[in-house]
Image 1 (cartoon, rainbow, N blue to C red):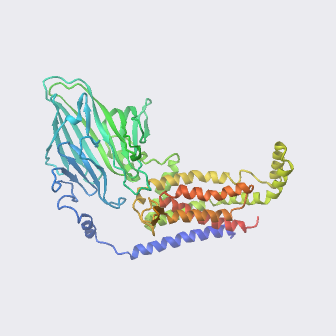
Image 2: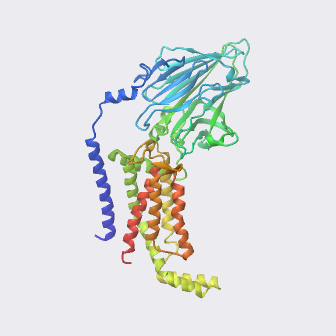
Image 3: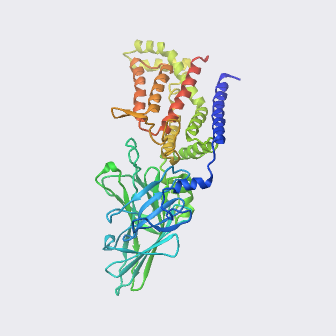
Length: 534
């Protein structure tokens, strides 16, 4: 067995050691009874409010009705007929309770709030709460001055993050109402309220039918101007990094307008959908029906929405995985999550995934390193040619090509293998940055793999040891890498660790962990190849 294979076997052995060590810890860990887990989650909760079975209850001290299941609780404004608060409970991917939306004012753009109907403003529509016999259903009724009555009905799913919504418009006046537009708020979503190292990220994603009848995806980011998308809107969503509100309707919207605020730093974003309503004669009614998803941006759940929502598909595209989404999805689903099922730690999963990727790319890295090593040996002859033909660039280039041909050196041999690895790195960056499974997940000293590993601060400057170790590792890697180019080019190479450290310093620690482990493996490979005979 040659030394290349021995290195590969050693790395695989490391994977198995970590795997069985983690499995042993899982077996030794005490198992908490199911009843104890349930009581822990509901200990600080008013009796009868959060229950295993969907249940309507009045919040203690307030007059706002609410309905909940095992996954979330939706609170409603009795005089607004809107969802004023959505609180998500701890689950397989949500580590602690999280509120996606809160609002108490009629000025606040809440999901499913009526913006307007023709010239009638939603702000002029006062609702009253009508208790329902169904334990998971809430009803509200309101009336405009033109005699149009509005009935809003919400029905929370028993075991999902879905709310079925019905908005009935009934003409109880004496005159016919002409065809008009009904505008409904998609609403906004609260920012994550994480540490200041993580900027708030919000986006609005729209699925619409183009002129060819095909469903397409359009994304909007916070900006200084409102934007409008015309066409058959199938569904729309507004999301922060890890949570989303998605709305679909049986009736396609003809338009969506994005909202903005002057405070761009807050990353505020909202949207309003326009639905055409036909003429309503006295006594006639129009019913709008839709489904609202208010939950985590979890791949498995979003993929299942294709069958659970009123209509539409491709809800997984709410997770923006960039240009290399196919690679990113594979790395997330069949790399990170698959290994987690066996080791029970996302930190170890990232390390194992790094080792596997390194093994797959081992031949490319070897080729790149050997090309640089060969280039290092040619440096004396290259410098001689450059000095001899310094006044004749064309002749200098010809002699260089002859030299490369003589020794069988390909100038692209060192760069091309690295470029091939770039899509994998970018895809992995997107996968780790958008994986809600890493949110609030600890590993070793790291409190949250989705955040920088801050351990303290010096004069207000945060200390992230993993990023610092990564920078030092890059310096060590530069010392091991064969030297190429002139003295100025070599000095530039030593600036790269500083640049990368600055770029990675505030990135998710899960991504920095990948890059650091990858560096250690690359250093081991480079050291081995340095002493390998040509």
